[in-house]
Length: 126
Image (cartoon, rainbow, N blue to C red; front, top):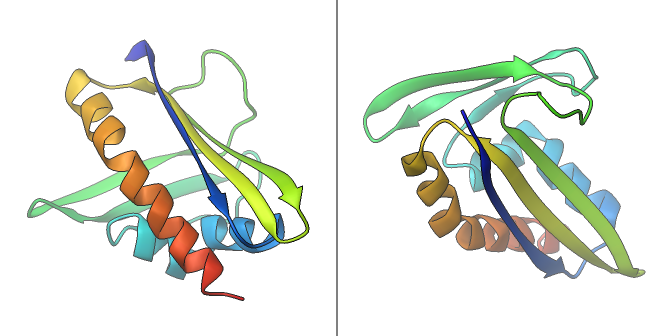
């Protein structure tokens, strides 16, 4: 695990934080912005989380545990929502720790598109 690598980018979304959070935690929306990934979890600390699907003609099943934000936990993806105005939210996606440089590069090059897709979905909920 390459814990020294980190990717972090932000986007301003013209809806309130509650709608952005809904996009980030609702499996049907996750599938739209996360490359068709099926998400299985109840989002409670200590619960299992599974991301599964197909990428580049290969089936995958990534899994983990919803954990507190503590050093030493594996790759940590953090969602940060900051209210800027009543109907404006700054959303930041940060990922710290990658299995390899290829995974890091994939996140680094694809994150802006991912954030813009989340923005489009959230703003479509108006």
